[in-house]
Image (tube, rainbow, N blue to C red; front, side):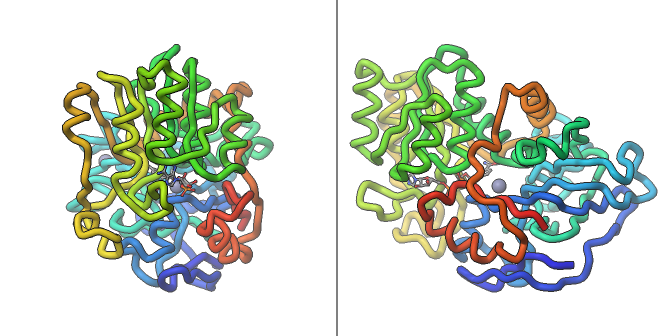
Length: 377
Ligand SMILES: NC(=O)c1ccc[n+]([C@@H]2O[C@H](COP(=O)([O-])OP(=O)(O)OC[C@H]3O[C@@H](n4cnc5c(N)ncnc54)[C@H](O)[C@@H]3O)[C@@H](O)[C@H]2O)c1
Ligand SMILES: [Zn+2]
Ligand SMILES: [Zn+2]
């Protein structure tokens, strides 16, 4: 089969690799019809993780079941399914509680597994013609009859829509609340979409890319074209000096300060400053324990100069982590089926697998107009 393979920093190519296949009776084999490139892929693409050469990218996958193992009860050949980016077992202590982003089985010795991901287990990615899905009855979301018609919306259930939703959950957003979302990439835009669906009164989206902010505005959010103190000041001005009820981090450890330089504390310190006293902060942007390629000594070991004094004094709270996609994807699919959610609205490019390497370059450069790329193997 053809797949997008990681060759080293800033180098991916489409290669012929052995076909994915059923290994255990509980596996299913999926013919991928849509698979997305994600901001999480870029941390790996840039060589800023331990992702191994030769591995296949792709954790945002949708497709048709072409084969099931003898132990699969529910899925049938021909079903259209969307897979959460997390691999869960369904029976460990964390999966039982809905915390499938922290499965204790799928990546032994660690909490959490994913397809085509650094430090998340052996599972290969779906930027390929075929994908092996383990614990398939648990991991596959069976899509409604309009699966093909709304495929581009449903594929967003694999990651960014539930992740944006999770950001607002972690932040404790309630109807009527105001929220500041840092990052207008796909995840930040989905957090904005989620906040608006949930009935937020004011939604601010912070970034410096006008094309991405324009999408946020189309959704009904207010774009803040600034970073750092300038962004904070605008948010304070628009909330009578009080700050927002809650805030979301949708950028991660490679966030930049007002000078355009990487500073892993930039967004977290802005969030402390632009969130009201007692407000909640939800962090879905990825932060990692080791980052040898970082600019500062602290960041190299996963630490940051965090404004803990202000944070404590304001009595705020922070919640973090990978999204537990399965905790939300069924309900979010219903919002799509009933036309209440339109996550496909942020797609900028629909390309073939062969065009993948070019797409990685443009998306990684945050070239204007490259908001979200979906690939059709
Ligand atoms: N927790 C999860 O389950 C989960 C799932 C998917 C993605 N992620 C992570 O979410 C993050 C965002 O993903 P994405 O696909 O939207 O990525 P992206 O890289 O396309 O978007 C990030 C955006 O943040 C902006 N930015 C940089 N510094 C900023 C600052 N100081 N203030 C405001 N904006 C700033 C950039 O201009 C860019 O538009 C990544 O770290 C990704 O790995 C987490
Ligand atoms: Zn993703
Ligand atoms: Zn589990």
